Image (cartoon, rainbow, N blue to C red; front, top):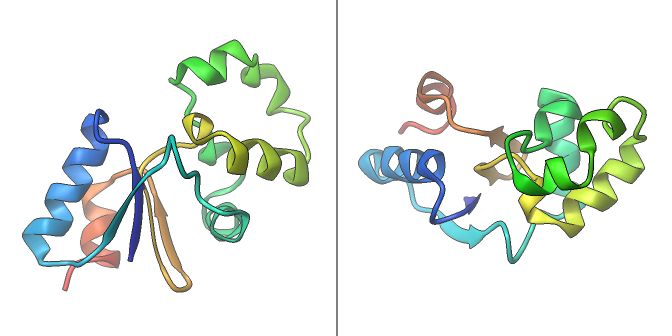
Amino acid sequence: MKFYGYNKCGTCRKAQKFLDDQGVAYQSIDITETPPPKKVLKQAIARYGLKKLFNTSGVQYKELNMKDRVKTITEAEALDLLAGNGRLVKRPIAVNGDTVTVGFNEDEYQQVWAK
């Protein structure tokens, strides 16, 4: 499993603690340095929709005026932005094969990632 997160993010730390407590092995990747590839982002869009992938509380989201842009942005444009700027991506993203989760919801993690 690959876990795209940010060590200063409280939500990411909660998700990692959950995975650790469940004994789930994962490779931790700093999302700000290495954003998820477009393939992973496409999987996430298929499951959650395009707008759910943006970190709406992030500084980059506000600086780039994404609130207005996200209403008219194409999927291809969004993929380019998200794959090129990990600070725009809602975190954490956990992916294992064809399974992906975005953000941390304990119930969802229990269903998807618990052993």
